[in-house]
Length: 133
Image (cartoon, rainbow, N blue to C red; front, side):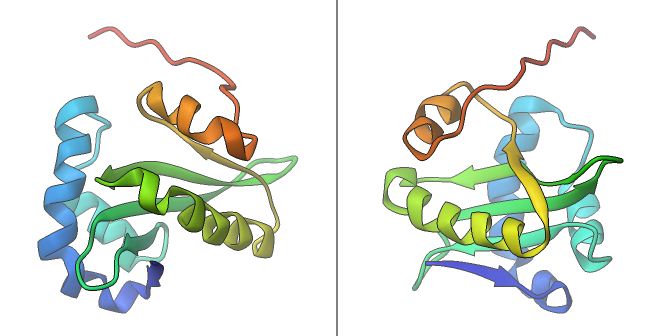
């Protein structure tokens, strides 16, 4: 259900992925454009995951962040629909990927709904970010 897309193949998926990511960009103004994200995926600084079999229902962008004491797999961009259908299976794969790469944590950011969605899997709200323009 969730597939990691090799960086060299990312551009071939971008016509479907970019509009999904644009919804997150429009809502949160994270400081990235879809072209920025594609460039980072192609440079292997971020990873592209797509959810769906016949059609792409969701997209997840991850990045491994190295801190002095540990590393994390961070998911700064998650977009799509029918999350109840794919959340658990997708996060099984992402958690295995994080473990394989020696990550202590898998983190994400977004709406408060993610706290509720992740709670049954053991995710908890760790901090809140505030921002003023």
